[in-house]
Amino acid sequence: MAGRGPQTFKKRQKEQQRKEKQAEKSARRLERKNEPPPLLDELGNPIEEDEDIEDPNSEDDPYGLDRPNPLLDGLK
Image (cartoon, rainbow, N blue to C red; front, side):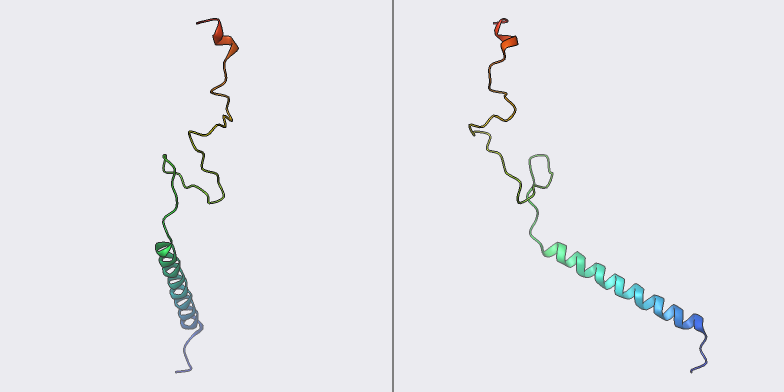
Protein backbone atom coordinates (compact mmCIF):
# COMPACT_ATOMS: atom_id res chain seq x y z
CA MET A 1 0.00 0.00 0.00
CA ALA A 2 3.02 2.26 0.01
CA GLY A 3 2.51 2.90 -3.69
CA ARG A 4 -0.16 5.59 -3.22
CA GLY A 5 0.49 8.76 -5.12
CA PRO A 6 1.10 12.22 -3.66
CA GLN A 7 -2.41 13.33 -4.59
CA THR A 8 -3.99 10.87 -2.17
CA PHE A 9 -1.73 12.06 0.65
CA LYS A 10 -2.61 15.70 -0.08
CA LYS A 11 -6.31 14.87 -0.17
CA ARG A 12 -6.05 13.10 3.18
CA GLN A 13 -4.23 16.07 4.72
CA LYS A 14 -6.79 18.49 3.31
CA GLU A 15 -9.66 16.39 4.68
CA GLN A 16 -8.00 16.28 8.13
CA GLN A 17 -7.62 20.07 8.12
CA ARG A 18 -11.26 20.45 7.13
CA LYS A 19 -12.38 18.20 9.98
CA GLU A 20 -10.20 20.06 12.50
CA LYS A 21 -11.56 23.42 11.35
CA GLN A 22 -15.13 22.11 11.57
CA ALA A 23 -14.50 20.85 15.13
CA GLU A 24 -13.03 24.23 16.14
CA LYS A 25 -16.06 26.02 14.70
CA SER A 26 -18.51 23.80 16.57
CA ALA A 27 -16.54 24.32 19.81
CA ARG A 28 -16.74 28.10 19.33
CA ARG A 29 -20.49 27.83 18.63
CA LEU A 30 -21.00 25.88 21.86
CA GLU A 31 -18.95 28.47 23.77
CA ARG A 32 -21.11 31.30 22.46
CA LYS A 33 -24.28 29.34 23.19
CA ASN A 34 -23.26 28.73 26.81
CA GLU A 35 -22.35 32.39 27.45
CA PRO A 36 -24.97 34.54 29.16
CA PRO A 37 -26.89 36.77 26.76
CA PRO A 38 -25.42 40.26 26.36
CA LEU A 39 -27.05 43.30 27.95
CA LEU A 40 -29.05 45.25 25.38
CA ASP A 41 -30.25 48.84 25.39
CA GLU A 42 -33.75 49.91 24.31
CA LEU A 43 -32.68 49.86 20.65
CA GLY A 44 -31.29 46.32 20.86
CA ASN A 45 -27.65 47.38 20.74
CA PRO A 46 -25.25 45.58 23.08
CA ILE A 47 -24.12 47.49 26.18
CA GLU A 48 -20.47 47.11 27.11
CA GLU A 49 -19.84 46.14 30.73
CA ASP A 50 -17.58 49.14 31.36
CA GLU A 51 -20.09 51.49 29.73
CA ASP A 52 -22.09 53.58 32.17
CA ILE A 53 -25.82 53.10 32.13
CA GLU A 54 -27.36 56.54 32.44
CA ASP A 55 -30.15 57.13 34.91
CA PRO A 56 -32.85 59.23 33.22
CA ASN A 57 -33.71 60.78 36.61
CA SER A 58 -30.14 61.80 37.40
CA GLU A 59 -29.20 65.41 38.10
CA ASP A 60 -26.58 65.43 35.35
CA ASP A 61 -27.56 67.12 32.12
CA PRO A 62 -24.65 66.53 29.72
CA TYR A 63 -26.50 67.98 26.73
CA GLY A 64 -27.98 71.01 28.49
CA LEU A 65 -31.55 70.10 27.68
CA ASP A 66 -32.88 71.33 31.04
CA ARG A 67 -31.07 74.67 30.91
CA PRO A 68 -33.07 77.73 29.89
CA ASN A 69 -32.59 78.83 26.30
CA PRO A 70 -32.11 82.62 26.03
CA LEU A 71 -33.36 82.55 22.43
CA LEU A 72 -36.71 81.11 23.48
CA ASP A 73 -37.22 83.38 26.52
CA GLY A 74 -38.60 86.22 24.38
CA LEU A 75 -41.20 83.94 22.78
CA LYS A 76 -43.18 83.28 25.94
